[in-house]
Length: 143
Length: 67
Image (cartoon, rainbow over all chains, first blue to last red; front, side):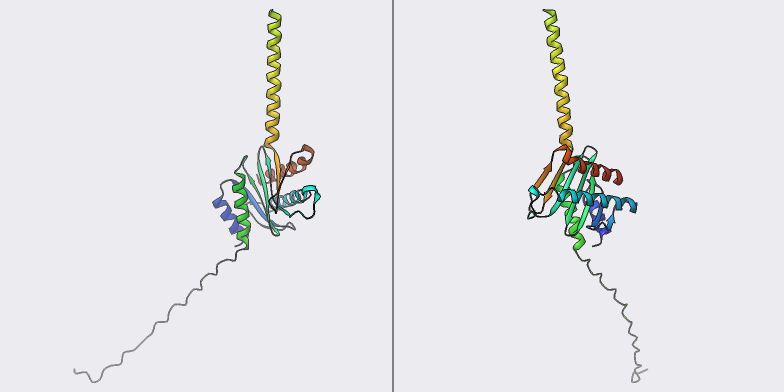
């Protein structure tokens, strides 16, 4: 599934997500619900910085601790979520006090759907050729 | 006697104002938070204002950009 289809599905299933941007670790935007491409890139950049800050918060700076998985920054005006799955990330905004677990689940599902291969569209069958059979005249028929 | 009543009333008033302010400040602090989850399910809640501030600033910017 491509990013725009996955984001469309995210919007269909989650009423809490206001805006979302799917991007790669290097900042390349794969898809966004924002119409302005520049804004989407800026959101991806800021979310990437959030990720970098979060990775520095590993308990006791332990390098063995597993990588960052997800984060929520709750503000009075709304919440910001960043979820990672492999090299892909999604940053999303919601209204204040969202159902945190549900939003994380929906965002994770969105990223997983990006990995699923699109179903092959069945090939259109060529219209069957009409057999033109000519009926042989019976010559031995009685008039 | 009357001055004592006035003083008690003033003390009660000042106490309730201070309590309300403390309660509101605590409530506001609780409504802004940063929770970071790691791959093994562990979670770090960034509560110290000096540590949380960079996260909050970036998040505010994201909310602003996303409209």
